[in-house]
Length: 352
Image (cartoon, rainbow, N blue to C red):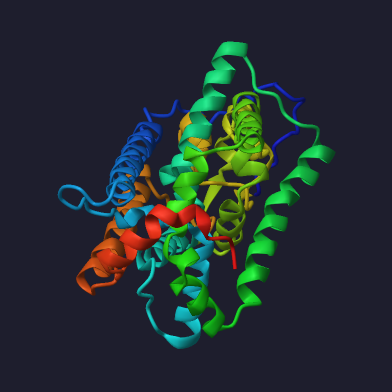
């Protein structure tokens, strides 16, 4: 006979005869270690890239610093362009190839392991999470936008994604190659750095708004504005991993819903397959009932522990980087003389 459970008022816990207190769960400690490590890696990349740019801006005095190819991970549109060329021609790029391989690794993560890049690796997501956590501790709460406004604002990231995809789709293979191999494309990474080095008033205002929004609203940038997150969320819909709630073990404490940074009603669902679910497993870590909530394969009872997700993220990221390096498609093939000419004049080049 099927077990029928009564619907209780919000906030009322059910006395469940199957209840057993959950054992300590370490997913958040593992995830934070990944976040901090990847954030530190990106800080190192930024420092090394700045040193590399300054070498050419000052006339090339001293030994040549190594240009960190990982900086190309911050060029998502160039990576999308290279992905289109690769899919249509099978040719791997000579300009910003690391960006393509990093994008492929992030796509693989979000396809196999939900939006794990967003919650386990993304440095912007990490900073955003620490900001709203700080805001919650300081003001004892985070603010949530009313449902009608939340839905409207969430559409912005899909609009931005659509604009980027349209721009890439409308370019021919020859046009993409001409763009990336032209002066603007070659030093697009330098122009990105210069945007922050020589930021104008409008840029500062935008950053302040994003900063304050991230302090008061959970995942402000990721939830409403990140086109990368929109793309990965769509890919995660076909991921084999999903959060599963075992109704027969649930005690309706609502802790999972309160812990979810995406505001999902985890306590009301059986399987959580939303595009907003980042696979952070905060809901699982907050659940006090053993077996009531877990990451599963295909929404079934086959449980996937946090260490398996961590191992999968690491294996995909490191595996793709190793393949790119071994095949000679990690470093951009540009001569020092061209960089010596273009880097100091990076701000002179306007978008074609």
